[in-house]
Length: 410
Image (tube, rainbow, N blue to C red; front, top):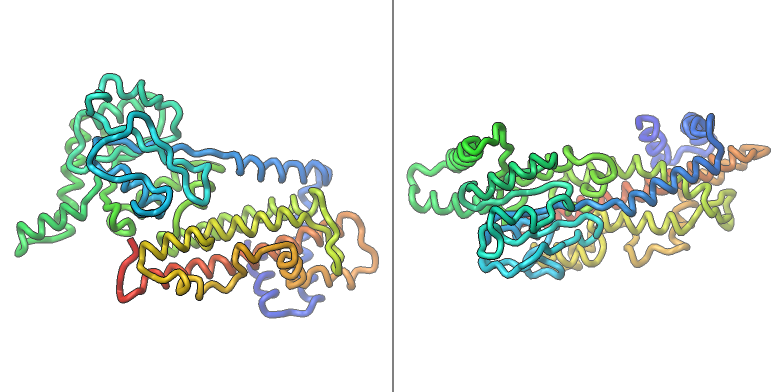
């Protein structure tokens, strides 16, 4: 990755083609190493299969708890939505669901949050609830309580543990607890002390029920960037493996600068596969340059990057509603071309900006592997440039949304 960073700096500094070519030789060697035991067609097929597998990767997250515990609000917050946004889970204190309801992430519908009917209602008693919900369908579980964890929560945790699945305890509505404590004890109120008391109380009840070392996350869905919510998101990322982890990361709203950086780092690695597929699968000669690429793969990747970083119109509209910012003000800080502006001509212009196609002028005869390598490098650097631009745009949008008259993003 250090070499890639150096090459990107070289592009930004406008080094002449000969120096850029010399620096690209080492990266080209890494590229050719892929073909020591496999032919071009096999490598391309593997790369495309991996991309297709990611597109079909599904992650199902079950959210459960008693009626009124804040399940729907939690689901909305994790998806970057409020109760009034399109596609949001309806909130309220009355349980109306009779079966699990799915809420996919707006920009990554294969990542699904499931709102399970409230436990302990007349239709869903502890002794039948687990079978009714068909728990085997879910990858992991979030158990939510708004006061203290009770017997039903322990029964759920033990059954999930017996099935060998992961679960996480969330104590919701801590903002309300803090306000109540400050109102009742204004002279001695300490936020840190109250939060620690809540954590100890939750741990005591869970350990009493046989959960030896429970992980407990205190949060408020109304203030989702505070308390333990960032820690919960980080824990989920670390515990999920493989393509499901990537899908979860890319589905997240830009809750912090760290999430934007992690998305950027993950996509930098993913660009290797995209570039391989673009250089070998259904390649089409690009007019005016000595490379052939799959423009449809590049177009799809660029539009996907835009959505992953929340720069599409739907994500910006939701963010504008949440923060009270005019959507035009959020769009004003975006420098990269908009999703609706990305087309074949834009892709070709960005390919030309890499300067790599021009390097063929310094090579008298291009062999098949060198031609493929130039195509790979061209696509690779073009997508890296675009990725850097959209990541920077996402951070500018995030900061703009956060700084309206000191108002914090919820």
